[in-house]
Image: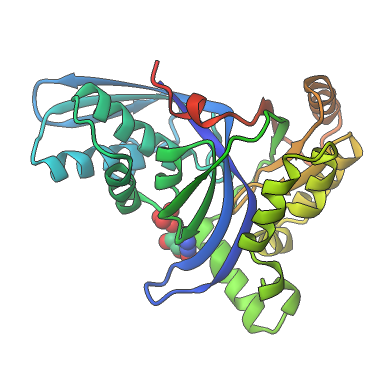
Amino acid sequence: MRSFAKVNLILDVLGTRPDGYHAIESVMQTIGLHDTISLTISEGGTIRLSCDVPSIPTDESNLAHRAASVLFESRGISPGLDIRIEKRIPAEAGLGGGSSNAAAVLRGLDRLLELRLPCEEMCALGARVGSDVPFFVVGGTAFVSGRGERVDPLPDIPPMPMVIVKPPFGVSTPWSYRRLDEMRAAGDQSEVTGERETASRRIVEYAGFRTLQSAVCSLRSLLSNDLEAPAIEQHPEIEEIKATLIASGASAALMCGSGSAVFGLFETDDRARAAADSFVAAPPCRPCLVFVTRTVTREEAVRIE
Ligand code: C5P
């Protein structure tokens, strides 16, 4: 089955919570870039994971492994399981690859073992594995809040061509959140999301923009990501990648999640491909991975083939 990546079209970090996590409001979107996962129930009662990329952990620290344990534990069962992951989604990119794999394992096991778990139950299990996992259980376009565990599906947006650029460095998610706190504590008010500009407020405009002819043009002013500031402070190349995407015809460009990848939205597939080609020819930093993809609908995001 395919295990898709995501981008955050909007990511507002509202503040810290008593549990140490941050309250967020985000519009998340499944994209076509994906890993491929196969699951095989076996004898023996152990969970085994293999991956074609050697740097990906294959023990319990892998979120896909943990998702299977959490599901089995919740059902009081202990079948053997082989999980095979073919990786295409880069790590430390803000594309949610590990969380997506975890959600794919939950959905795949639900189907294989004929559990027919309600979506809410799968989301609750997913939230025990990682903050982004519930979104991937639902997929498509969604308004996400809490620490990520509250997922309200939104209507699908029309498919939009996209280019993803992953620079050679990664950004650690816990570091990004910590550095944002420090920047805010130091009084950098530009890094504070105020009442005026919450995601919930912009989401109303967002829903409205779908009906506008000038949809893609209005995106640039709509998209924002509070975690860009700490990431760009550490790696100014992220700003350069955004500028290069805009210069090569993107209607909007934004860092993905906590970074370090950046996405650009394009009006046509041809423009996206041309921008990707020019990026490969003259990248602002080397080596960059470049992917041409598009947004995908909820039906496609959760389909099990
Ligand atoms: O939930 P997950 O393990 O994916 O989160 C990784 C880290 O990112 C957390 O340990 C925390 O430092 C940070 N985080 C946060 N607030 C969120 C989500 C993640 O502070 N809403």
